[in-house]
Length: 187
Length: 187
DNA sequence: ATGTTTGTACAGTTTTTTCTGTATAAACTT
DNA sequence: AAGTTTATACAGAAAAAACTGTACAAACAT
Image 1 (cartoon, chains in turn red, cyan, orange, yellow):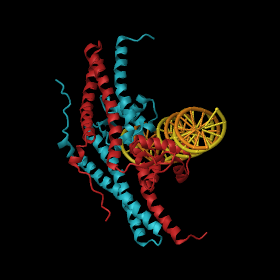
Image 2: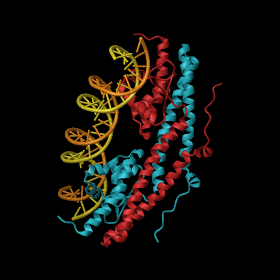
Image 3: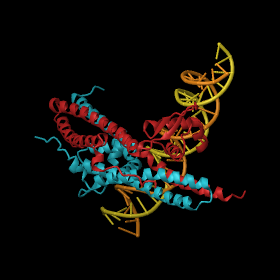
Image 4: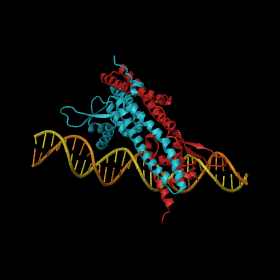
């Protein structure tokens, strides 16, 4: 089973691709994306043309069902896009070439959701505690309520700040502060 | 088993605390912290004094071992601090009151790590591919290498930008752009 | 030194998540 | 309309993660 020189070169190329894909896959959980969906992303990323679910399935040696769920996760995260090609009936997917947009979108989506959920719960809790602080018969309860409210208000200030940070990305004002970089151009 | 009015008030207070704690616990995975460590955080957060592992264990009805690992995760994330009290031999933990600092620290730690890992892999891959592009005997390999390099360079620009964003937080310059908010003051 | 107390490593169990194969619905072709 | 092709819902299997109890080491007390 001797390999031709071309085959060995190709292996080396694939290995180079895999190194990057592995790194991405191992860190992508910060975006709530599973490791295997990260590998899927990598596979699409290095493909010269949009891929079908069947091709992905063959590429990664995984079931088509998994490709379907992976593609859904990546689409929701705006990391890949569905594309069409005339004459092709299957759905085709390719990575969104705008890393800034796709990754800030994810950032915004995940973080603004968690931040607003926390803030909502915080305010509801605070309101309850304020009632207790005023109305509770037990002095111990009134005292602890006051303490808790203080704690929550510290957190509240932080969450409001956080929402402004998210806004910085949502409004794209971040790009005025830290400009997009040009990719080294092909010459 | 009739409850006294004080007990009912206390229940209501605990319920208010739990609402916030649940929200935090459900979103804290974005910091790579497990849900139960998030609940642990909440327990410490609403405690009037620093807690020991045994107290936490009783509070959450979980094993001391789990408290130990939870505490480690929260400490690594700079969300809680170990404190000492004279005469007390056990380790005591309390939440770090500076939400800005503890949460930006986590943000920086997690994201700069993932970003630099990705960037490192990316550059190594790119170098390999550049060799192939120049030296490969197979034209097909040279072509694909050129294509991959282009893809990687797009990503590289993004990662470099991302590192500057992280720097914005690390240097605290973010606070010049979006100032810390004052917590509503106790009067 | 001997005996306690406290925190954590580790192996095994339980729970959760991920993955697969089958079944089916929707879209398309003839 | 009947027959394909394609994508996904769902139930069960496989894998991973979280949790616990036991064992032990380090720190302290006597």
